[in-house]
Image 1 (cartoon, rainbow, N blue to C red):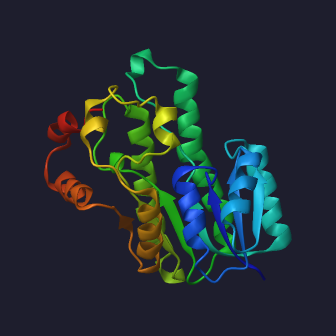
Image 2 (cartoon, rainbow, N blue to C red):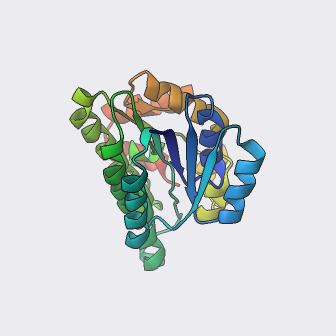
Image 3 (cartoon, rainbow, N blue to C red):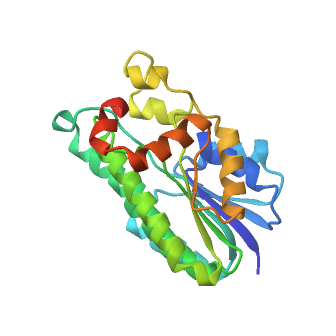
Length: 252
């Protein structure tokens, strides 16, 4: 039985850093998943030190999730790490937004993450780790990123509840909650310099350090990992200060 890791959203940004970092683990193979096959092949060729399987698919499509489930059932892998990293956000007032794009955000950030977790869990066992890329947006709702912050609040609740369910099986579930990072996420979200005063002034997280810290946190049995002292303080603050007060400061 092959010991594998699976990373979604592996074609750029934090996903690439998870791929690079997770190769330090005792694994037989890594499966990297994203829509851009050419980009995945480039990453595997450039950074791959152990056997890597490129899986090009849109994980928001039910037929693709079904195909992945059938692949699990056929190969019966020993999934040691499953990293739900795929996701995106969009900035803007909801009454001016493209409803299709908002729905796609829910499909990827919530629906796909949920379905993939469900099909992976039967192939995870004691000492396995499920890592969900979350966000500081899960701590307090962000105006002008209403749907995005709501999807990340779901990811946080999902992580906490599932971790509790799996405690007897010794499978840990961790939410990795970074602040802004210089990745493709910002371009997709439409966040360029000058668009958001908040994003222009916030300290940025390093994707490589975030991936490294997230994996270490998962292995230490932690539920939530937040890089940088600034955001650790914000996370504590969000527990004691009314959300209505912090939302003004968190406005994008």
